[in-house]
Image 1: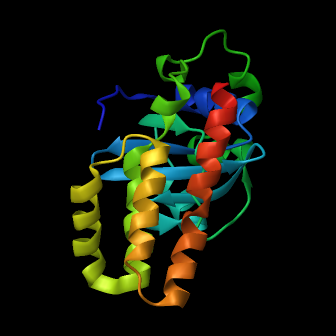
Image 2 (image 1 turned 90 degrees about the vertical axis):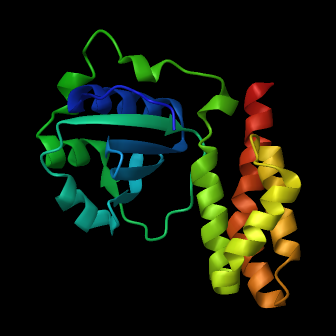
Length: 203
């Protein structure tokens, strides 16, 4: 994982607000420490799922109260939320840190992390691969770990959505149960959609 400096919660709020205004959907990964991390899934300027330290949504929100500094990454690839809920960014930052986004949005500059790298660099491949492993485990159980490692050993560690799609297709072929295979392909379909979106955005 790339090492990034921690920033105050106010700087994190500005970056997330900016990201939500410039992307219709996306994922924000944030880290309090190496062992305390969370995920915001954003659609249409609102949070539709929240995870933090194994907790989800309302429980995660309560656990985050008092957060003061954080490291983060913003990605235009939206991971599928396990359990959806709806929360405005204003309510989120008011709840965890007593921040008023109306005032924060008037600050003259954005933190260093909001400088936009290339779209390909913004994609969090470890998170996507983690989602693939989890989906494969749902389909095959404990044996999925060996099948996943064999597939990665054959294809190599993906560093593009095209290669992630190829890995996803290979894993699907190793699921013998048609119903489980169909469910796996349904879960991973948005990877193909994300690759299509990336091509459009890069042209």
